[in-house]
Image (spheres, rainbow, N blue to C red):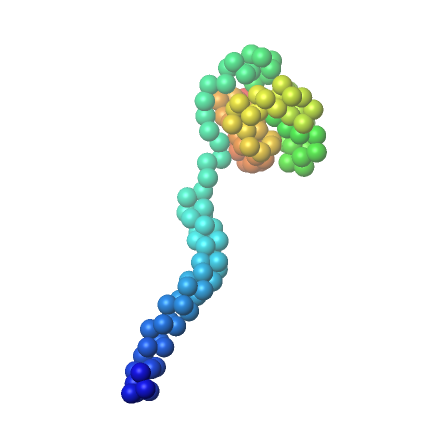
Length: 141
């Protein structure tokens, strides 16, 4: 080992330290680029505003073709209520924080967040004003 030249020692140090330096470098690049790539993906492929299905059994039980699963403290649920009031929409609201039965139905329907809206054939997860207005307009036709 004592007969190693400076060039050999430098080459050996580089082979040892470069991989050790690449790990944190790639980690930091991932922390920076990851969220930006997700944002770019969602810009190119936006999530669906609603899904469609047959909700006739729900409407028969509720008595209205507009149903909302909500909580009493949710600000987006309050926005949905205000929008329904503005549009003069009669709807049935199930408050999942006050009723175990409503919470069980909400969970059975795969609900994750509130408001969970059923308008006509559309299911809208979350407050998406343009999707709600569009669903109400299609319901009136």
